[in-house]
Length: 183
Image (cartoon, rainbow, N blue to C red; front, side, top):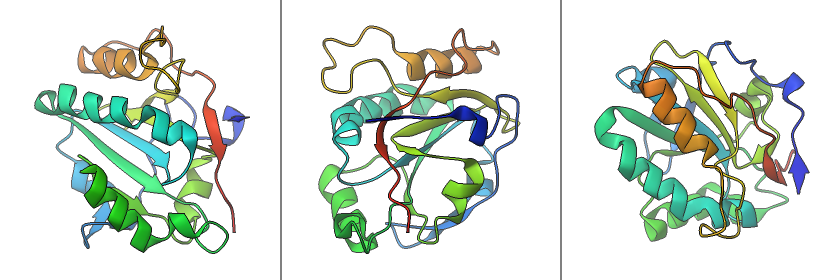
């Protein structure tokens, strides 16, 4: 488990950085593709991390819960596929199909986006308002291994607050997960 140092990341109040990344659906996705979103959740993820796998069902639930409210999600995999072949683009495509991922799953093959954003861990969540100002940075909740044991729904609370035009009560919470596998 790695806990992040947020001093390297986009600061709360900072702007989302542009990207153009190939999705498992075969198209290139950019920040502009989410211009209509009232809230945009960008998260760094991968195929194999037990933290990602542990929270995956709850991510799906949040997408379903908030989609009609104008919230969009995009998952970015920046792991080095040479060292971690299960994170290759082909494996991403298989996983997206098998898991019926309800959001664009895109590949940061050069790791330039992850470096620019200061991402360090999978999963690592960034919540932006309609102006693409960062309002929350952190983890989904406090128990990756058990939805039943989770106490604080950090991500859900942050999304709801931003939708309501409020600042989240928790704007940053230490991220737990697997380190991004750098080339």
